[in-house]
Structure formats: structure tokens, C-alpha cells
Image 1: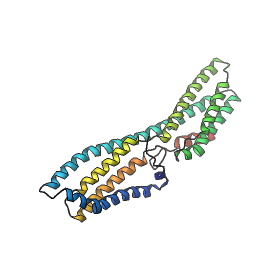
Image 2: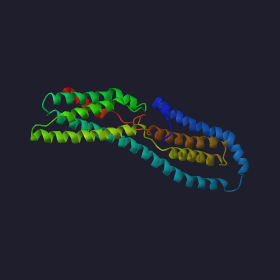
Image 3: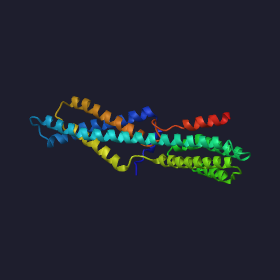
Image 4: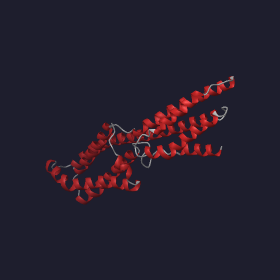
Length: 264
């Protein structure tokens, strides 16, 4: 189960990034003032101590850097997968709209109206709910009404039978993509990944506190490392849920489809 970062997405993008960076830097500086002297009592000064800590830190950073990189890629792939599902859903709805446009009246007009109503609902009502991490429920009623109305049509010619079979194939594809979109609304990285990330960041900072350097140098160099760690964490959190944050899926595919429907 992913961690709950709902509060994070309510903060403007630039402010959220600065907040995450500031939190990591403040934690590092506070530890440099409070924790570092305690660590130095257990790690006595010895020739080559900094070299040893640097070697351990470099080995640790290789594994931790790979972990962060892979997690960032995974989070981005989740966003990309959700965007592809949205595009496929809009494409299937567009093909269905073209198919029912060739139905005899009044069936064609009624089906087109239901498709336009569903598309408008997704843009105006469902998307704002998705951006809050809420799964919209009313869209299911509209999709079921569209499916039931399509099943009510009885083809009377071989051509209508072929057209109806294609329309049924498109609506099944549309419903499948719609279910995938709803499933990805609350998708996110598992809790274990967050624990490993934050524990790894703590160990990284802990090793830096153990360096035997001037205090000002410790603050500057360690602060740079902590700032970059905070920036990476911000990026991963921002991409954690596909429909929330700055890096998120937009309703552009549905907006283009709805605009074309209004032009018909």
C-alpha cells in the first residue's frame, strides 16, 4: 500500500520542491550540529579515516543511486502507462462515435448524445475528482447506459450487423481502457520502496556526518548533497500518482474528441 502524500499535491509545484529541499537540508544541518559531535565521540580521529568513510560512502551511493534511478523510472512509467490508457480510451470512444453515426435514426442520434454526455462528464467532473485522488462514480452509470442502449439496437441488414459487431468491439475496448484509467487513479509506489528510499537517504546523510572536516565545510558540502536528495525525492513523490501533481496526465485527448463532436 503506497504512502499517503495527498497533502503534498495541494502545494504549488515550486513551493513543494523548495519545501522538500529545505526539509532535507535542515535535517542535515540539524544533525551536523546535534548528532555529529556524538558520532565523533565514537569514531575517533585516525589517519586515513576520511578515506575509509569516503570509500564506504562511494560504494553505498552507487547502490542507492541505482535504486533512486530505477524508482524514478518506475514512477514515470506509471504516469506514461496511465496516459496511454487515457489515449486508448479516447480513441476507442472516437471510433465508437464514428460507428454509431452510421446507425439509422433515432438510434444513431441517441447514441451520439450519450457519448458526448460521457465525454463532457469526464472533462468537466471526473478529471477534477481524479486530480484529488477520488475515483469518479457517476461515469460508470453513463458508460452502462451507453452499453445498454447499444445492445438495444437490432440490425436489420447484413451491413448493419457488421457495423454493430464493430461498435460492440469498440465499446468493449473502451470499457477496458476506462477500467484501467480508474485503477491507476490511486496507483503508486508500494510502501516498501518508500521505506527503503528514506532509510537509504538517512544512511547517506549519516555517513556524511562522520567526515572529519571543518564545520563550515561540512555544512556546505553536506547541504548540497541533502538538497539534491530532497530534489530527487520531490520528483518521485510528484510522479507517484499519475493524475496528481505537476507531472500528471491531462484530459487533452478527451478535450480534442469533445471539440470534434461539437463540430459535427
